[in-house]
Length: 130
Image (cartoon, rainbow, N blue to C red):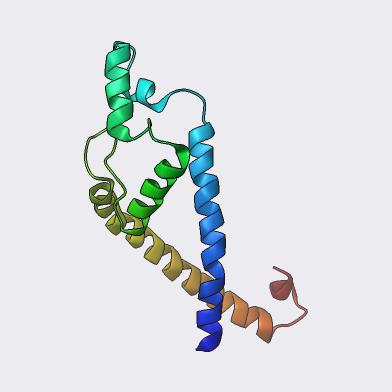
């Protein structure tokens, strides 16, 4: 049990580094996110209002603190395309995803276990080399 806890605790720094890298990569992407969301017909004032609403006018460290805090609490925000909460979109797509994953695992078990057993039983034969 303590081994499992140590391993889980060891992943925390890795996850923190990954979160920082993802956040920075998002911010290093070319273009202004507010201008992209607002579209070509938006005025400079519209873009500035959107930047403020999205918190893009805040310092980078504050944006990261807000972003990571929301991430930790499960608030993934709202989709810029559909204006629907991202958690709702994920909820709609989790059932088909899990169904596909379960079917894949079942097929793998049905194929791999008998083939592995046969290969072990006939060690050195063409089945083993398959």
